[in-house]
Length: 303
Image (cartoon, rainbow, N blue to C red; front, side, top):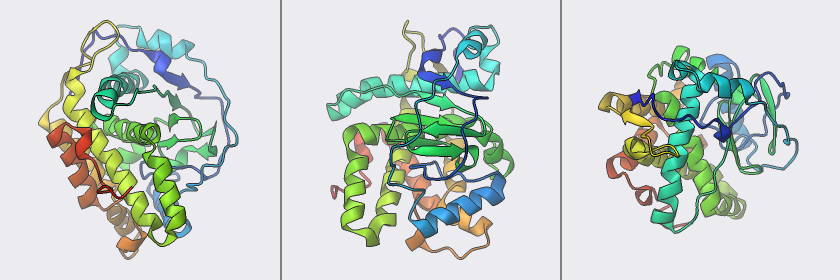
């Protein structure tokens, strides 16, 4: 993977709330599959989700309304060494993902894309879905249409789960923006209604939502080198097969079965909320191989 040093990094697509605090608690919908403080915490959070039906998916609106201060980020991402900085690289990833959907959503689904900011936070944050701490991992909140991430999650991903590749990072963000697309298309809301009508299949429906987000991430990855900044400069110079292998490796390592095994618990597919390692690999690969988000109908027309 090579980013283009001549592309402008648009920090307006990020809300930098690091250092502002925010509190703790769960109650967060649609996470990547992360957890609470290292691998032990990740396992605990996932088990809470399995027992409780999935990370507080009712998304009741409370909290939120904070505004970050992007001054430092703007200065950093305008410097010559911007792409050496973790937060600037992640901002560039966000720029690419949103540039892709800005074109793909109307072309493929006939709907206009509505941009969503990514909130960088540290330790805790107030959201439209309630308060969260960094232990829940990256997540999308449908109540305020924002993606949230504590960038220290990537250390957990590499050190505790073994997903060390650089391309794990844009995969994680592209997955969360897949949830934003589901929100815009009404897929997420339809799935919630179906869960209420058929609670016995609530987990299975959650898996379908997550696998579709993985597939959308794959479609973006296939088209990442075609994305550009506001001036037409390509954001990515290249994305290699090794990068795609890193994304697939990450998807496999955050599969429900893989996390259950790390927790020394029996693997029970009926308790899955995000999909098995094999499923997550399959659906990311399907999106990547086709390059077409229309190929990502995990619901099989049953929505």
